[in-house]
Image (cartoon, rainbow, N blue to C red; front, side):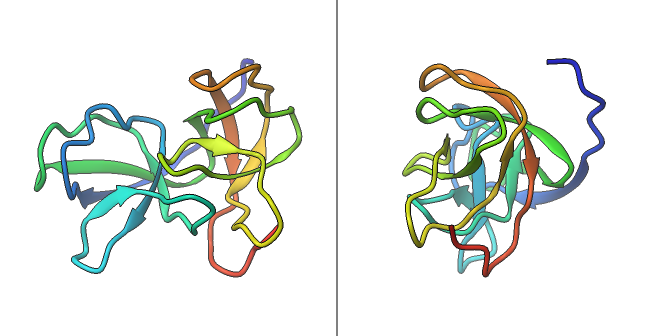
Length: 124
């Protein structure tokens, strides 16, 4: 899908090797570093780069339309939540809504565009 992507990015510190976590939902941990968002948890953004070690700079999209790795099949226009690895999945009752899929994913591993709608208090 060809869309105009306007992202608001910030730089945070990677809590681990995140080189395999590009375009996955991220959460700021108690130590102030980012880690992949857990299953159904609130996210603070989507990782845009591939920091290869803890302590490296991590570019995190916090608003706009971001690429996100699907954790399962997702319909266009559907709300998305995080799976255990920070992938976009359809939310179940009580899980945090993190955005809206702007295109469909037929299976896990596909990269889709998601309109980010981050923030606490948006359970499905």
